[in-house]
Image (cartoon, rainbow, N blue to C red; front, side, top):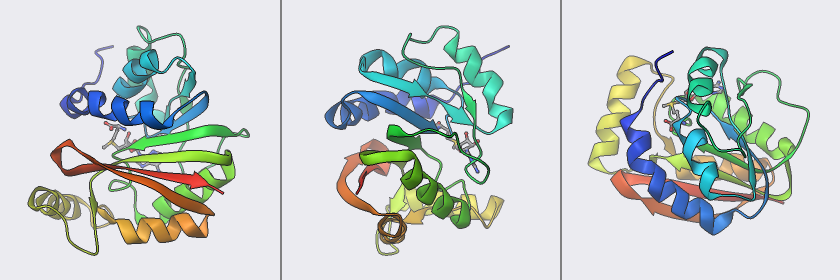
Length: 193
Ligand SMILES: C[S@@+](CC[C@H](N)C(=O)[O-])C[C@H]1O[C@@H](n2cnc3c(N)ncnc32)[C@H](O)[C@@H]1O
């Protein structure tokens, strides 16, 4: 099959790698919402201590597999995982997700955070890449993006950092870092207590 392609993934993979290198040691990493599979096909090559498990809803798995035909040896075949359904019966040292919290509705985001808490070892990290608002305000480009998302589907939209931190604390996470990234994106890092 033709591999699905996201230009945004090409643009953000180097800055994301720099932050992952800062926080990741060794262990298993679950990626939620792997999308095209480009991150899973490229990032693990530079994170040799990481055993990378991509995942997404069923319809995206063939595209992810196509990318992984040429992927590094420390990435597994993608797992079918809809955060609203059943999760794998295992724990991970890390969970990473990119550009998913503004696509999922708020109930799914909250559920994803709660399940992440149950599938990370104590001290494990949850790293979340994407655009966020802060106290209801965000950069102009993110405000336009938020408007276009909500026009497509009122359940989508940028999430506020304060709300995410609240959901995280409910799931027994504490904030560790909030990295500014190119194009008004962030990487939020939370540790499971
Ligand atoms: C904008 S794409 C981002 C894909 C990729 N991570 C990236 O950065 O390019 C959003 C992803 O979230 C996934 N997603 C949306 N709802 C989901 C759910 N309930 N459970 C798991 N993944 C979901 C979609 O299937 C899609 O792959």
